[in-house]
Length: 55
Image 1 (tube, rainbow, N blue to C red):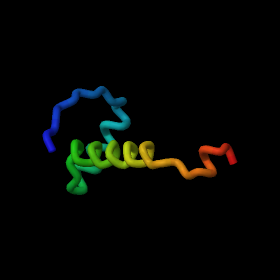
Image 2: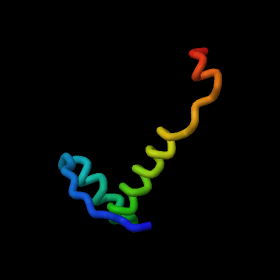
Image 3: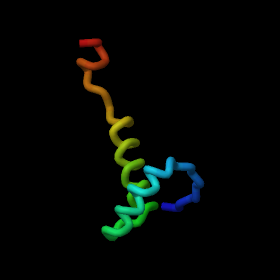
Image 4: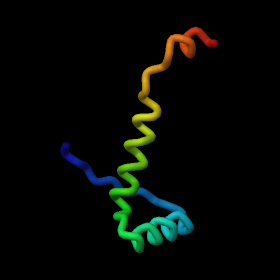
């Protein structure tokens, strides 16, 4: 899979939290990629027939 680069702005408090994860061995880009992939999977799951019927 080909990746593209994105530049995002974060609040300083969030940057500090990501830096703390880096100290535990995570990479910031890997962590953000994982979170975004999980959210995309969650939001693209097919709905059940009962959800479509408004139950």
